[in-house]
Amino acid sequence: MKAVVPEGSLGSWETRAIVATMIPVLVGLSILEMGSGVVLEVLEETFLEHPTLFVLVPVMIDMGGNLGAIMSSRLSTRLHLGTLDFSLRDDVIQKNVAAVMMLASTIFVLMGLAAYGVGHLSYAVGFAAAPPMELSTLLVISFVSGMILAVLAVALSLGATYVSYNLGVDPDDTTIPVVTNVCDILGVIVLSGVAILVL
Amino acid sequence: MTSPVLEDAYEIYRETILILVVALGGGLFAGAVLGGEEMLAGFERYPGLLVLVPAFLATRGNVYGALGARIASGLHQGLIEPRFTWNRRLFNAVAASLINGVFISIFIGFLAWLTMHVIGREPAALIELVGITFIAGVLTAVVLIVGLLILIFAGYKYGLDPDNLVGPIVTTLGDIFGVVFLYVAVITIGVIV
Image 1 (cartoon, rainbow over the protein chains, first blue to last red):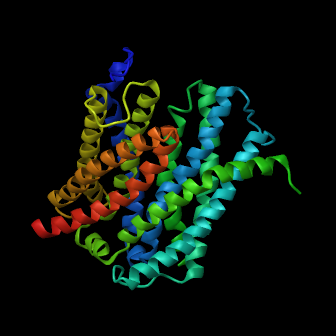
Image 2 (image 1 turned 135 degrees about the vertical axis):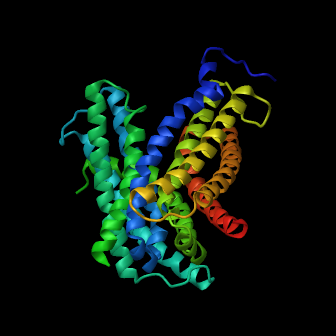
Image 3 (image 1 turned 60 degrees about the vertical axis):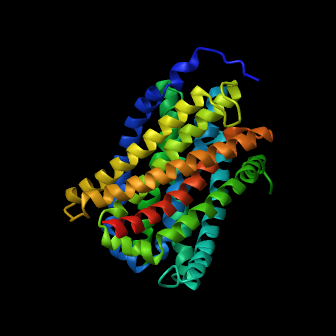
């Protein structure tokens, strides 16, 4: 039952090679992420006063990257197929922007509602010390920060794909990881900014 | 009223919404743990802990997402089999992600300590912050590696394309276990230091 194993790509399956390529990326990313961390730290008072905001943090960290990844992986596939035209009239760009905005409006309304439910549940079982903030405030914070994040994710995906197209590098290797990670960082910053304005 | 652009956009929407809702659920669970009483007490007791949360969560996705992508292409190429048998490539890939995951966790603990000094705030002891990220890093590594392999292998045997599974699996498991083990680590360090 031994599988037929073609030789050749063994190099990239060496532990040392994998570690050597990943570590600089991880170190760089961690340094960038300290930016989000500092924003949380500086706004610690606001966050501790309104612990519901913490409930939104992991989703905000992920969702920017998810929306950016959806947008940029589709753009990059079109780029590879040679059917992408960089103009606002291009229908591939239009339909992807429309799809990301539809997804974002569903997800971030749902996030506000579900965070409210989760907050109450957590308080009811004695895990959280206080009930969540008012539903209307929570919905405004989650929808406004979510839509700003979606616009940024779209803009960054388009910009990054355009740059890699002009430089002749494969967006799959470069821009998608950059876009998803930058969107991750922006998530916390946008959330904190909106929360400060609303609260 | 219906234009072809909107119809196509709706098609993309339908393909993607379910995965995003699952990721939302995982993220909110993680958020509930972060906003819990004990964790908030941890943020006050260990200054610098809050600084490291985004980096700790984001690197889970990168380390184990890379492992998942590698396993997925290995399965497609027939380089590895979808079962837990001795395979040098599989072992090397798992060992590399374990080393990456644990190293970067320790580094993040140190970096948060350093960052607090840079912004002029007094951090918790270095040993406390690094202890927390080390414990949380080891525990997440074990659970994520085993969980990812079980789910990818099972999905592959059922004829699902692992490329489509890896992203959502890593994000959801990473959020849930990342925060849960951060919580466990905070409690553990509180007991032993």
